[in-house]
Length: 198
Image (cartoon, rainbow, N blue to C red):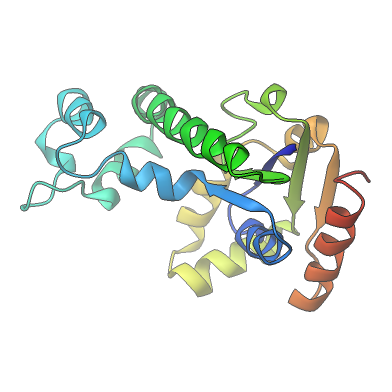
């Protein structure tokens, strides 16, 4: 079994790479999806967020107001670290449970899709680390067009993450997403068939 860590900056095309790996037969564990699950109403993590950030980050129905929380944590690195200290351990525990279940089911390739893999210093956990990169200006364009963010918000989100150089430094393979989706899928397929070697 190969245990792969997949990461890339926001709007780099990491989700498209994960989708292609899934088509190729890998088990993909999505840290973002888990991060949403562990802060649903009634969870210990949501209760801790309430204690740390107060009622301002909750919607009227008691669920997490993600936009309000994002406004706090993307403006202050200390607040972001506080949030990560609550959410990351819960995400890791659930990801480990899912990985163990996949291995027990005979999975040959398990990929953990983790946006903040480098920032949370997890690269040593994996047999291979796969990094997706895309041109800076293209990533900003995608965030503005696909997510409706203004340029300042897009730049702030990128600045809150590791740099391309920091991610490349821990990568076994870097996939450059600078062409069509078909070209990206071809690159991913080649990497998969090569056992995640360059």
